[in-house]
Amino acid sequence: MNDSFAILTDSTANLPLPYIQKYDITVLSLKYLVGDREYPGYDQSGDQTFHQLYEHLRVGRNVTTSMVNTSEAYEAAKPILESGKDILYIGLSTKLSGTFNAVEAALMKLKGEFPERNIYAVDSLCTALGEGLLVYGAVRRRRQGQKLEQVYEWCSRSRWQINTIFTVDDLNHLRRSGRASTVIAMVGTVLKIKLILRMSQGGILKQETKVRGRKKSLDEIAKRALKDIKEPQTVFISHGDCPLDARYLADHLRKSEKVKRIIIQTLDPVIGVHTGPGSIGIFFISY
Image (tube, rainbow, N blue to C red):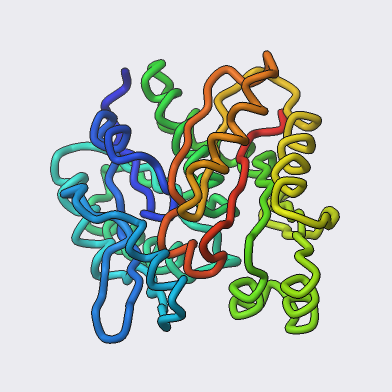
């Protein structure tokens, strides 16, 4: 393992806590606010359950989110450089948040203070376990002994190949985040229409198709993912507090020899605010 550099990412990368701890990943936490109470997107104690956030959304409470600020990023990154390590930061897409720019500003300041250290920042152009997939790949290559520059170059190329195929249970959450019109949300709710959405090609979000009914939407995203997974790999599934649906998807995917391993994770609360309970997606790299 090459331990000459540390990997820094955001809580929105949505990786499991045991994995973060095992591979010594530094996580910058975005936040969500319910009323006047603030919660971290990433809780190092592991005591916080994401279920609580989804219960707030189910009963209609107003929940907002906030990004990482430059001061927080500076305080998290400085000890790493002081320890003699370089840094690779993999951040939430700039198309979705100002977090990457805030962290990059902190890293630029630190570069002036530690000119002997190498600091690289990668805009993942992704969110949730798409961002997490990039971190996962970076950790794997660091474990193989690759140099910082090699891992950075792999991240810069691979971010364009990450695919997310997903659906949501309630289009009103996407409407509030600006991803669906009021008309579409109303029609979808009344007719039980489920949109199949894809984020790919550097963060471009598009509607792939639409189906009627929850089960058909799960079958459709599984079918489309299996069609587009070309090389054997680890596949991620995230879910908005609907674990039974996630296991149903996983059972579909395991039928393919192209799926070597499946990691299932409850969707990060900061992203979950915008997609709502019942959202579910598959994340993979289309080599």
